[in-house]
Amino acid sequence: MSDGTPRVIAMVDTINYATGGPLTDLGQTRRSVLDEIAGEPVDICRPASSLVIQPNEAKDLGLPAHRFAENQIRPVGALIDALLAMDSAPLNVAREPSRRVIGTCRHFAVLSCALLRYRGIPARARCGFATYFEPGKGLDHWITEYWHNGDRRWVRVDSEIIHQSVVARPEDLRVGEFLTGGEAWMAFRNGSIDASHFGVFGTENWGPAEIRGNVIKDLAALNKVEMLPWDEWGRMEASYKGETGADYDELIDTIAVACTSDDQSAVTDLYALDELRVPELSGVLPGMRSGRRAGTQQTWGPGL
Image (tube, rainbow, N blue to C red; front, side):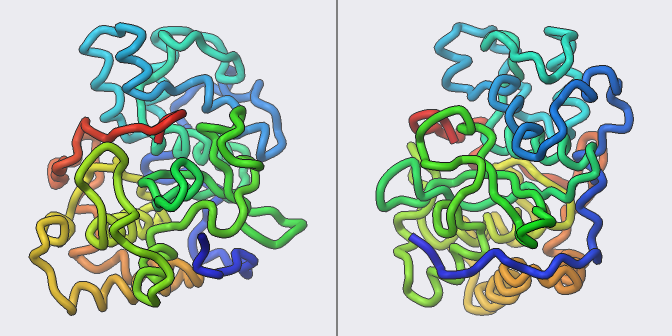
């Protein structure tokens, strides 16, 4: 399943993806726990799979209820602090499942993104849909991508399943195996996909509204603001309730074109609009709504 969009794109520096953002800066993290991680991009992404655990797996282990608040952590520095509080070893050391931070696919992706940026490698977390967990379905998911200088392209990595066989090459996803929100929206608008097959596994949250929401979240992530899967702002809540119209879809069209073409000037200009920008980025994000999916994101197989 693919929208046919190539990922060989000219690298421009309107946004510096080689440095940490508000949620991926590791300046306060001890260098000693970071510097043992291997230097090649794919190897930098590998540790995440043994540092984060999905809520359903944590439940199976009988972890205490208070631990599940960890999946609400947004900043990677705070995520690492929670991890180190349980085990002070460097991050290249695999943790026992009970000593991993409880998180979602977003946490695997953003942790990998932060570690790549710490090494000065341009990297981005992307919000969209994986087509490899269930045939014929696009399931709500986050992955990481890094810039490959030799190939002059963004390489997409699913660090959550990098040691599994869910897909042939999780370290270099093929076109169509993961669709960003914008790619999925454009494919929906041109009739290439059925939007009713795109959504959150194990819930009733399927259809165009789910794709719209991921377009907005991916726009924020491209501006280095990587939110939680259930965060809502602007008209996202109204869209989920079916209360938006053609004007909102036209705005989503514009965002999708900017994000899929990697027009970083347009990406920054769009994010400057009040309804598209995350309301307030601080320690507690007082302007943020935890939406209808807060704490209820379902997983499939190895976990989304």
